[in-house]
Image (cartoon, rainbow, N blue to C red):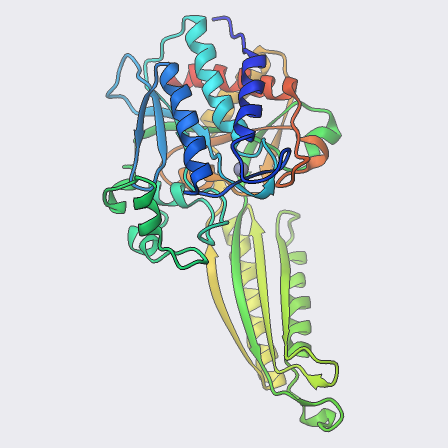
Amino acid sequence: MNIVVDRERLIAEIEELALISDAQAPAVTRVVFSPTDMKARAWFIARCEKAGLQVRRDAIGNTFARWVGSDPAAAAVGTGSHIDAIPNAGKYDGVVGVLGGLEAIRTLQQSGFHPKRSIDLILFTSEEPTRFGIGCLGSRLLSGTMPAAAAKKLADKEGNSLEQLRASAGFSGPLEDVKLPDGYYRAFVELHIEQGPLLEQKKIPLGIVTDIAAPASLRITIEGSGGHAGGVLMPDRRDALCAAAELIIEIENAARSSGAVDTVATVGICEVFPGAVNSIPSQVHLTVDLRDTNLARRDAAMRRIEAARQSIALKRQVSIVEEIVNADAPAQCSPEIIAALSAACSKHRLPFIPMVSRAYHDSLFMSRIAPVAMLFIPCRNGYSHRPDEYAAPEDIERGVVVLAESLASLSS
Ligand SMILES: [Zn+2]
């Protein structure tokens, strides 16, 4: 089997898709279910059909383009990613995994290969949280990680419900039907830009992801007592910001003392009320983003934050209320798919390193119902989610070669 990627065609397609955007080039904005998103989907489906793939769409708009195998009843092999883009993003993020997946399939077709298992190219709906405030909506539903009932409650900032929006985008049928049964996929592989600087720094063309870190996000509200900055003496104070300051340091300590570099905690938002120079802060809102590749370790850090919350509230006589926004479990990639990717790299004499994905992707949720792994390619300066995001054509090509080779071995 001779794998020859049509690099010019693939790069031209990436450029063409980037122009279907609500932002001025080179920036890309494609928010889920917007007219621009729908135009991009139609453009993509036309390309899949031209390649002879059978296209199916589910009730949330996840789109499956299938190359039917010689044993159509066997569990399929999946690849793919997303094409939605946050405001003012770049052209490579999920697109490399989607159009790179299409190119991998076309490359295999051209080589004369015929899969035994069907190969699905998946375009996941709403990987980005832009519209509904939660990331990976399509893969959460597909994997049953999010129940349909919870999805039905979602709405965008303008108050349009998910149910209205998907109906007007032409996606009908019960959301309950989106979940795929366990065993539907024998393997799922996602090609993606690294979104970090390591591959570029090490001058290594490929990264094989062994672990996908998962975030837990918390919202914390601290209520103390306000008052005049001159009038209320120190023994009588219940300053919400001082309590927040102590808690933030404890959150940092919870990550620092976990014993592993993979535990990271961030307080990214701290809103102070009333926010006046001569007024004691009465209320503070914090957000916490806590990530790890190991669930037990992440949960231990969560418990440490919880203990700090209780003791600081007691000591400072303030109320500290914590709300868990989400606490997804991290994923370990499948040794079998890692082996297939490694063998493909070796066959094409491409150096690779094992990596941790510190951002999460649709693969994290696909891991709940199928063995998964991810393949990373370098991106310039590690930049992503910005207009100057860039992946070199030769790096994209290498990624597609290894993806095609792996899809062939996994579907045989
Ligand atoms: Zn992405």
